[in-house]
Amino acid sequence: MMSSNQKDIEQKLRDLPSFKLNESKQKIIHTQLMRTVIQYENSERRATRMRKTLAGIGGVIACSLLIFFTFIFIDGNHFLNNENSKPGDVQNPTIKENPPKQNTMEFSAEIAKELTNQYKESFDSLVNEANENNGQITSFHTKREIQQHFSIIMTDDFAASLVDTYFNEQDGNVFIIAIDGPAWLMEDEDFTVQKVENNYYTATQEQNNISIGHVLLTYHFQQVDGNWVISKAEIKNLDEKVILQETAQAIIEGINAKDFAKLSDYVHSEKGLLFSPYVFVNEDSVVFQKNEISELLHDKKEYLWGNYAGSGMSIKLTTSEYFAEFLSVEKLIKDGLVLIDDLKERGNMKNNIKDFFPQSKTVEYYLEGTPENGGMDWESIIFVFEESENGDWKLVAIVKDGWTI
Image (cartoon, rainbow, N blue to C red):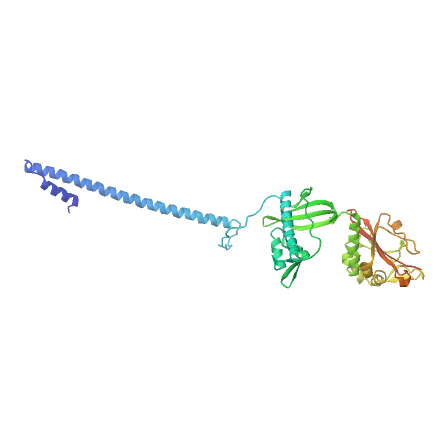
């Protein structure tokens, strides 16, 4: 069957003007022309097949590359998401969008300043707001909201403690409590940054001013989820008289609450705690060791605490009986005068506390006598302290004083 090209050639040959060629010559020319056309068509078909083949190969290669890179991408993500997984673990396919930016910087004084400044600015803004609204915080409706506000720069526990100390919630409103506010690091004064653990640092600064006295301020910082936050703030008073008074106050409140576990925290670990019913202390006074103090109220044994002034009769009492008779402190807490290391002899009994404890400091709660009793019903309790090896003032004696015959 002739192709379209061959038919065109045949027609054109017939249309050519006649040349004076014999029939044999015409057949030769016709044959050569037709052979050339056939060779051309065969060449074209081979080129077309080649182009189709190359196109097919190119498509296969492109498809293979697409599959290959898709596999690499998926498998790479799988590896990144599972590098710490164990065989058999089921992976959560959920992808977190916009993960929080992590602050992995090494802690420094600049970070301490930045955090404490943010703390101060946030707290001061609430104080100013309260001053303008009769003590009410209008920008927050609950203590929980304030706690969440502060949790950006501090731990949840510290934020909760802060809010409980300085804010009160009533009838759907929040009010500030009128007490002295927190102490802040003074930027223009030196402070010391110390590493406690890898993710735990402290910043300490000694301050001495009218508002807070002579104190050592310590801020604690820890890293939570990659971010540095404030975890605690402490103030240690460096004024010796203030330290003694604060310690004595904690002790007398513990006695009044019958919390002898709390009392034991303040007792000297080596010398124990001596009890004397009078200001003349002798060698036979009852002494309990630090580890015995917390259980004193449960002790049913009778002890010889000394002799009653005037009668000379033995003071044989259990610990509970002795505390009830000689350590009633409620009136002293309420109305007593606090005297720091200022012992006086008010009665007719010699006060030998400083002789017995020559390196001691004392805190006395003194209550004057009443006019109706001629002032003879005065009483006091004296707490005697000695310095421990660590430089802390520890309780070594509790002495009762009062009018004696």
